[in-house]
Length: 287
Image (cartoon, rainbow, N blue to C red):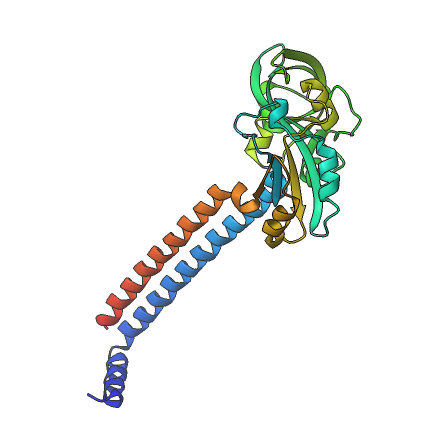
């Protein structure tokens, strides 16, 4: 059968069964619409989650001591970066770098007269642009100043769980760099709601200088978090700032689990498209 005769026969078949043809076309259109909408929705959610995590948590690039392990939140001198603020200032001289924020991570116990709970203690430079989302997330009280002493921020979910309000005095206990226990009374300057449970439910934030003094690490930092003007420059910038006893992590390294979820989502796209195409093929074969 020539192509012309085949197309003529197909056209007559479609016209002869016009109602069934119309239903088939409708099902095909709806199927494709659902598949494309689901694909766009999932991709948009993943892109948004990645962008938010970079902006609030990981940055585009991090510099750490080669011995540092995030899960341990070590305060040992040999695991930390020497003079974190100087390293951050040096990184900010690069044209690709928007901001560089030194941070100090540790763990401790937050206590009120009613209860105690384990928390993550984070020392930040309140003036650095990277911490803008925390400043914007203040729901009660006020943000920190760089020279504040004895004042902290508490995640709103954590505060709700423990019955803490802005202005309340609480106890914070932690081990210092020498393994000695330290405890002090702090005033809750403000409550923070960033929309990230890891921050809002488990974190106490204080100025970097206060955190360094409280933990006895001097001017050392756990990490330098860099925001770049273009995230595609992460690898090249990492190569340029690499120094002795340093390790760097790009935004891809720091968000590997999220990127893996993205890859799994792509597989689901293909499975969904395959199902739609099979349904379409079956409908066309019966038209």
